Image (tube, rainbow, N blue to C red; front, top):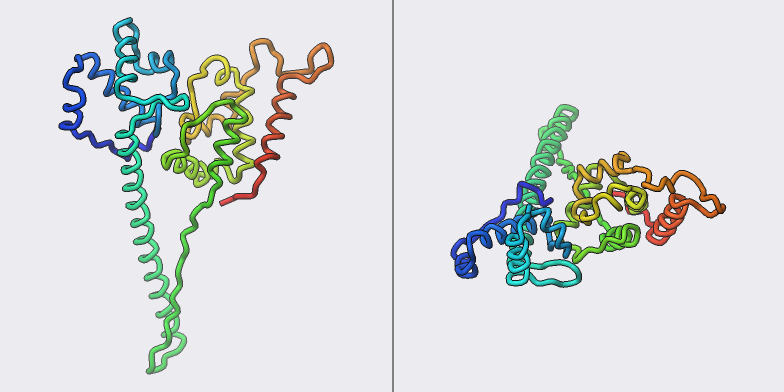
Amino acid sequence: MTDVSIWMPIIWSDYDKDTSRLSLEQHGIYLMLIKEYWNNGGPIENDIMGIYRSLGALTDSEQKNILYILDKYFKLENGYYHHSRIEAELTKALENKKSKSDAGKKGMASRYNKTITSDITELQRSNNPSPSPSPVTKVTKSIPKPLLDFKSHFDSFKEITGKGYSTINDARKRKLEILYEKKLIASLDDWVLEIGKIPKSQFLMVDWVTWGIDWILEERNFLKLKEGNYETASRNNQNTSRNGDGKPSLSEQLGREIAAVGAKYAVSDKL
């Protein structure tokens, strides 16, 4: 989900111009889809049954109106429903948040430098009581900024899980950066190792399959994956040992496939 500190603007005059002929139920569905898009941080996956469940659509009327609103206001591309206005507002909100964050970091660095400079000046004066002023050494503290190969991260996710993604937008990049900042991962190798747990999970691969890249990028969900909360044996118990015919078990096959993906994307991109 998108960071809750990012609020979404709604220009009601623009909304009214585009929706004046909608029924009360259709208005509610459209607003729920807008909320779903914003919280996902990007386009909605073309999983109609998943959308029904997410919006709580139980009646034929509600489900038909969902299809009507999707067809009328969203554009289906590469397996995802896109909405240009929401995408523009989301990008703008993330840019505003980033500019404020950068300004805050710059101000903090400036205050830090002033404190260090003052301390050094006082030290020099106490050690050298000369009538002429001593030169002041200015100490600066650089703020590291991660350089990540976003495409390799998302492509390896797709290759391991079979789950696609529409775009690598700013929201998804920021979520990945947060995983690094919180030290949940330290390199692309770590990412491949943790994502490699997904195919072994009955919950994620069988019981609930409507999740996507945005869900796993959420810090709390990724932490559960890292801690092994989603690792479960399959229903046919094929993961624990070799098959009777001597062929590798499912877990062994998955392990080999994940190791191959890790070798393909191997880097040392620690922050």
